[in-house]
Image 1 (cartoon, rainbow, N blue to C red):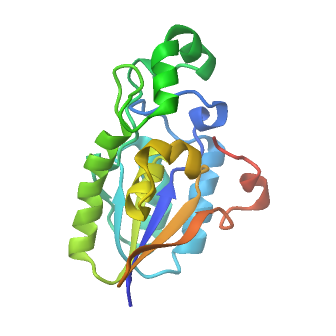
Image 2: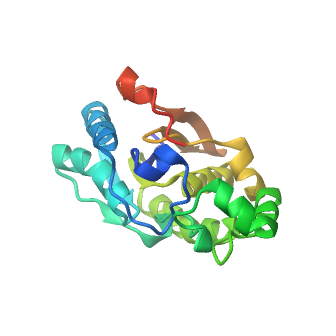
Length: 212
């Protein structure tokens, strides 16, 4: 049996609904987001879990709490799983950022690995802090299922790091809709992507909420 890493993005927030920049901001889930959390717990409580690692933000904690309550397992909070810090773009719309931070925005779109949002984080910085959590998991658990609950940009960067995809392309190559889950198996040849962005644990009406 191999180690399987389940990478879950949090459920819907008002920002994932509107597309505004939200990294260090700490909103709770919307009512629909809480329903997504319940739906995840109902499906995935059937799996045997070795551990649950979670970003210490309201939206990630709320997403996994129903599962933790159902199976009686404590979540392990890790700062390395927090979302990208969008700096001065926090709470701003894309249109606002394009108008007021146009040069930084273009640089970020072109090469986000090394160019951050204004006063924010680069993909390289996020990969560095997140990789310490993944390394901890790999060291502690050689087999079984481990759940990681994080955020859109951070999860896409983790996946790029594991799969050998250029970090500068994380926004172009991988998506992670609200409450979607991806699965990576660690075998003899390294990380193998088995599932990307699955949402079939959600009822149809919640799957219709794309959660940008």
